[in-house]
Length: 259
Ligand SMILES: [Zn+2]
Image (cartoon, rainbow, N blue to C red):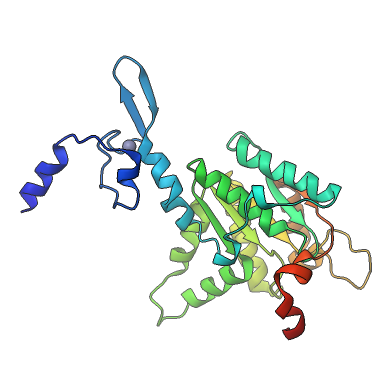
C-alpha cells in the first residue's frame, strides 16, 4: 500500500487553484518541490502557487488572531481624526513595504481608538503576502509562559516562546497591561530584546501614553521601565492615536453596563 501511494504522487496531475482549496497539502509540492519557487522552462522562476495557498489558510490560522477581530481589515478601518489617519497610512504602508522596512511600530493611545484593529490589519496584509505572523495579547502570552512552568502541563517555556521568537512579524497587543512585577519585566525584556537582536519586525499596541496629561496617570515608562521604553523607541516608529472610544458606544453596549 505505501508503495502505491508513493507511486501516485509521482504522476504529474494538473491542479487548479480551486482543486487545492481545503485539501491537505501534499508533503512536498510537485511544482516547486518545496522550494517555493517554480521553474518555468525557458522563462526562469516565479513564486509557486503553493505559497499563495498556504498564505490564505495556514498562515492566517497560525497567526492566532482572536475571533473577535475577524472583521478587522484595513478596508474596514474608518479614521475619524488626523492621528488615526496617520496611523492608518503608516500601518498600511508597513504591510505593503515589508520586508523593506527598518523599524516596527508602536501604537499608543487610550482604549478603543482602533490600535488593535490596525495591528490585526497589518497581520492580515502580511499573511496574504506569504509572511508568517503571530498575534498575542501580552497578558495572554505571559499566562501561557507561566503555565508552561507547571510540571503537569506538557508544554515547555520554549514551546510557547519559539513561535514568538520565530514569526516574521509579531504583534504584541496591550503592552504594559499586566502588573509590572520583576518577572513580567524580565520576560518582556527577553522577548523584545530577542526580536530586536534577530532584526525581526514587531508591532506593539499599548493603552499607556509616553507622557500623561495628568501626573496621576501612569505612563508607558512607569509600566515597562526606562530601559525597555528606550529600546521600544529605538526599534519602532511611535504613533499616538487619539479619539473617542467608539467600541463603548457601538461594539460593546453590554460591557458598559456589566464591567
Ligand atoms: Zn510549490
